[in-house]
Length: 322
Image (cartoon, rainbow, N blue to C red; front, top):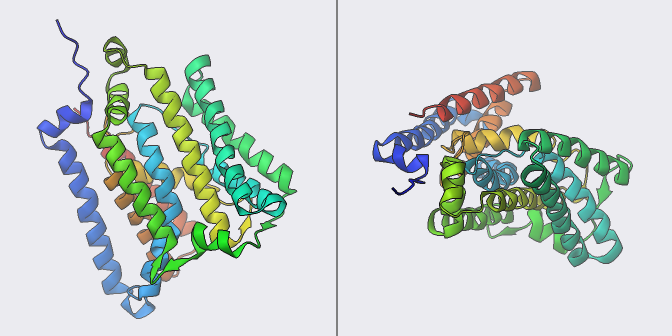
């Protein structure tokens, strides 16, 4: 008797449930855009600069959310991404000051790799749930960033780095949008068209069945946690390039928006199904709502309430499983 390791998302797709969930985010995005366009047209919502700013403000969330799609699809979670982004921005800025842009890029990537290895080993080898592992790593990463920077911003004086990592534009297209598009294409292809992507979905859809089929589920989870931390480090490098400084506060609280973007886009919070395209749309929706709320003149506390509502909606949609 053969063992069925079909990811749960594949079974849902047979009944059209995953398509329903994805269509909801697309329709919701269009409705919200049209509502804001109608109510905020006199406040510059449709101004091209404002629309491009939405992409700029959303790009870092989208970069982290693309990787989070893999983590959630494998049945794990990463709460450390925001703090890792802040830490990577600091290590990158400090390394640029010491050895130049290439040294800074290497330091930022290495930061993500080291944190990812720690998260992966603690989760897959020692057996600590990823929720607790990454929650603890959130505090560690933030503490280290505060310590090595003495809680001060670390300026970046390299104009070349700032252009490539966040501050530049190709014509009217922001470099941040190019980063988001490239990583989105790579993430979609890897998740949908490669053996690794299928193994990620199988691991999240049924870990025991995946192991019996010969998939090294611990290795899969180890890899996705490294990918997540590296994406968070890249987001921190983009933050640093856009603001021309590394700060421990960069990325603070982003983990909630990142998870919400992935789940709101159709990725299952319980593993087994993920969609990179939906995740990017989910991230853009969150950015769209944040931008609209600011133009409406709402206080920050009110914006937090709205953001919390988005997360509740995302979790509710993720529970539509049968």
